[in-house]
Length: 287
Image 1 (cartoon, rainbow, N blue to C red):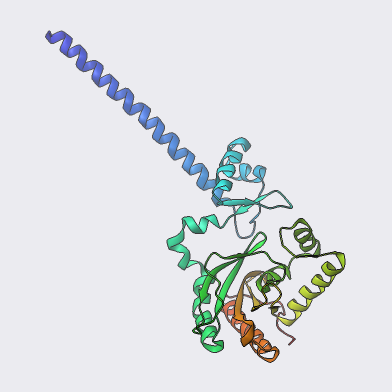
Image 2: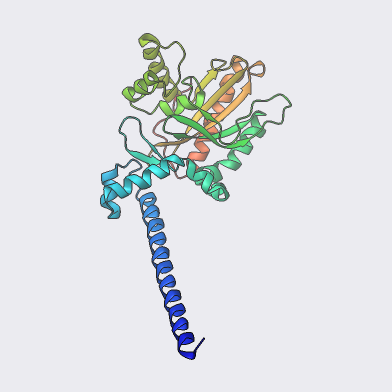
């Protein structure tokens, strides 16, 4: 090979490397842009505006609606967002908790509630749990198990959508009546054998739960289990969580049921206070 041909080949190699670097650079830039867009979509959701439509998000982040739709479709598959059944708008999904598992301990309600739950379990001898609402399900995000050999537990991530579940009652008690009717009629909230008469009675029951300050499930979902739950409020007076006590039915007489309900409500009020929350008259009357 002559000197000139070696030089030519060297130049060709340099140009190829330069072109490759340029292509890789564009690919890196494009990849970074996709990630930035995805993050921008997630950040468009706020505590004050948790439900957003595609057009609203597109306007906020400066992207085309088709781009936002593709991002949301991917997020929805991964449970990072979910679609509200009534409005068809999007909210953040609990799949984000799985992604941010190491940070779950920093979830404010969970962190604040933990010592209160420990006190509640010591006081009652029963399991205590913190539940949060996601669309149409009550989800356990913290639990302190009973010291008894026979006990009922609510493991992290357990989901409930039974209308008679105590925690579900707590969350539905602050929903508009038509929303509750829609959830039950559609089956999103399960209620075996429900008809219009029993649905009307259930709505009255939710009002009673709200006035009393705690809800009860006395063997209605499961014959051998009793559950009592009370709401936790934020600074706006919105229910953000529920404290739950699940217990074996044989250990809970009607008299003890009242004591558990009062203890559960006191614990929920303590969590509310630690959050700087404001309970709008809940628990002002004894049931």
